Length: 354
Image (cartoon, rainbow, N blue to C red):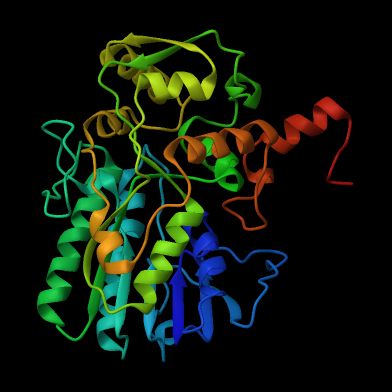
């Protein structure tokens, strides 16, 4: 089986490659990204992994998808958040170009990374299955774009019945090697890792009503690999079994918690975003507060997938990576792109540019 992964250099892509290299049904992996890893990561195993430069918004995708059995779309831009036309061009129009290329070729299956944020706002905390509407949780560009891609997949399923379409809807994905990238995307490079050290912050403010579902990237890699080699189609919720609230977050940070009205957080975030001090748009906070609680039973029943890492441990692993500045040798995950390494060099007197 020849598998093409578009957006292979990120958090999910690197975990998926690791999972697929241990999957007997897979004989070749084509890993595509906008920027070539230098050096190329050493992928251990019997599966041949080749890296290619490809931009889904601009490049001719037909040669990339030639002879592919399964195509996995993980390509996604979060920024520039102040220019949503740029993210729309990649995330939506690029996805449309990839879908059409898969339809033109002999691709048998298309596996797409959707999101919990594609869902409509929750009406309570009872877990919902994959039939919950997907109209987006907020006005955030991320949520709108994920919901729009769901409509593109609806059209593809109707237009090309031979194409097996799989929509993976994960909760918030964490891994220690993606910590510096995620800090850069959502908090900005000036956030010191020491601020998230357990016990350092005696009182942790929590937005009132926050419930958080997480999942570890290694578990996500296994779920995507299962979708690649199975004959399953449709949507799958992917999350750890536990739901994190204020009490659970307090234990992870070893801190007392205090609930704060959500408007306080959003006001502060809006001020930071408007002055370019924080990269995350305030509408993302709305999405965080409105996402439904997901049930993951369909993935267990049809993919044979169960999370091996708890929600608390997934978040704790991320915090370990954030404190230590961990990463991975691909451009999105490389600590040198986050600002952490330069601050470390200044503190220690070591300069990696020598």
